[in-house]
Length: 193
Image (spheres, rainbow, N blue to C red):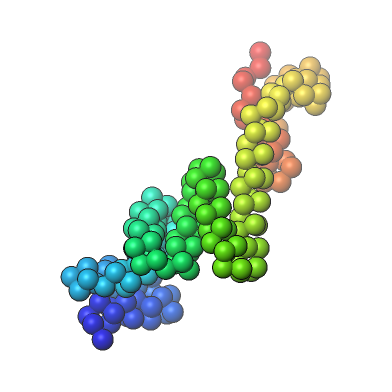
């Protein structure tokens, strides 16, 4: 077994023991060895694992870099499953970064691979991911078309009935649920006279 593959194996063992830092270190060292050894397949999968580690720790820019490099190797190797996985991972990075068009593009390419492979489970997963993107896009569009809180019936009533209450209500409302939505609208409201 090559040195790169030994380090990769140690990385997997560390992941199983939830030793993330050690796994990352072993994968980075494996990558260096695999580059020297010309092991493109090993590099492709180690890069994907490094992307996963970064994604889990919300280091989305680093995850994107690793997944993109992995995709390049997967395409060179013509590894359809690896290409699909890299595209899906990139889609998730873009989704969490709020780049919904890029996320949709990557998920759709991954979906096309699942359709070609006649993989109904994979198709179902990417259908769900694409559905989430459409919901997020719709939500963003609706939010940009929303009235100011003071222009709503409730906002107009509160501003007339109890001037100054909007700031007070916004200070005590919870951050989630329906009240979170109201709080968000209140906080975006320009201060009232």
